[in-house]
Image (tube, rainbow, N blue to C red):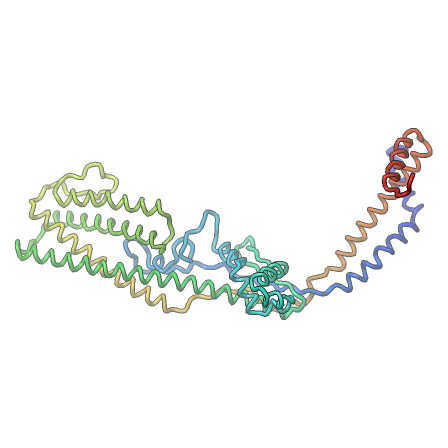
Length: 414
């Protein structure tokens, strides 16, 4: 049969064996229909959470760091730095998939009882939780939409139970988020209290040194150019304190960063300290042009350099004390302020219609698979019969092979 008549041959074969196909398909489809209608209905509740917003707030800054950063919202909003191409939605998704959240929901919603795992849980708590987590994962899924929203899906045989589970998931996520934010705020307050004590100590020491100098040498009224020189030293000392503060915040886990970053900041502060010492001693600070502010070229007396050092220490300590005090007040207010809750765009509710089983899809899949298998069987059988009749020499090796196979499965004695 040539290529042009091959489709007609398929149609002929189909019509020739029409009753065989009809009977076989009925034998397959009738039980399939009965079984699909016996399957339990399941309902999927969809919940959509809006992307977590940046919880940082504008305000005073301490040594180059915003107050919001000390409140634990640096680089991502929860007090930790995020890897490249990672968003807060990804972080929330990982929290939703965490074992802690799943176990809390399982234990707070009697999920173990609904899955008949109570007896196993009573005998061995860890084994019971293991099987409960596996059952829970079969009906629970989370994902991040292309727009950054977080989608939660839970499926069960009771739509209202799915709603209850979804509400418990949201409440647990909100509790974890609030706990993380609160812990970061507490750490920030403690850190600022330490900075406050340090700033007060610096201010007390700088005030005593300046008063002692003025009692010995009298009050000095600096000229405009010398005032600029003092202001430059104050700026360098402010940057020095800033680098040390940022490094301390990183090492304390208050802000995002790692050990190399803290080490770099500390070395940067060390270079600035060298420059400050050179300036206060009257020596030229060569080799530090990249971090120096333009200084006055005039040389002053030793007394003037000493006064510039004490005056710069006092002004820097005074500014630092005021900023840290205000920042600490903001941190205390933020710690006692109600934490922002998870924002839900689509709250859990009755889905209105079952999600499983999808009977039409099941019936179509079974029908197509059965039809293709049966039709393939008919084509193979027809080709075998045609080979037996028209080309027996080609069939003879196959006949011998099938005979040997039958002997392998024969239990009769020779």
